[in-house]
Image 1 (cartoon, rainbow, N blue to C red):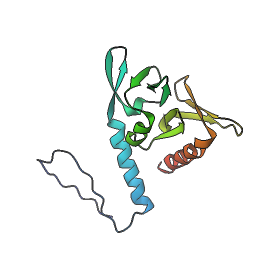
Image 2 (image 1 turned 180 degrees about the vertical axis):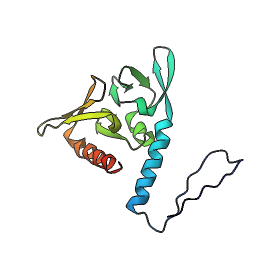
Image 3 (image 1 turned 60 degrees about the horizontal axis):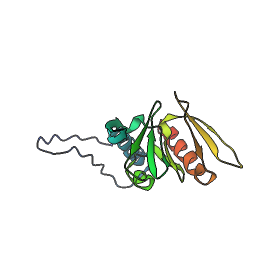
Image 4 (image 1 turned 60 degrees about the vertical axis):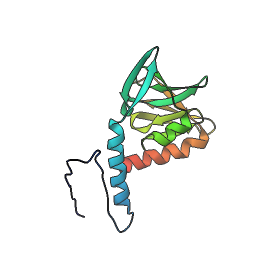
Length: 153
């Protein structure tokens, strides 16, 4: 495999191009790693009271709906966001996964998953008391995402 970097001084935005004969698992892994790094530095606008906050997505534990509003949870705080969950699903990087009709979580912050075969499973996060329930319908998606992220290490 070759690596080529071309400096273009008047380029308005950096661009990464991968040329390959086939989409192999290694190429897909590179794509996921690059996309994850780009997303880690991306910020969104969050609201609390009358203030706007610009936080990196990597600080977000999970998003949840409540009373027609979507909330973003960090380890220590809660913010409003002006997106619906279905919109966030399209915008968020691969480390985020839908776990119920009312929640999307960041797999990079998961400490444990308490699996319950007859009801919702419970996710706890590193350095936070906050928890999220994973519905049985979405559990398989979460498990697959955790396996994929483990395989990237």
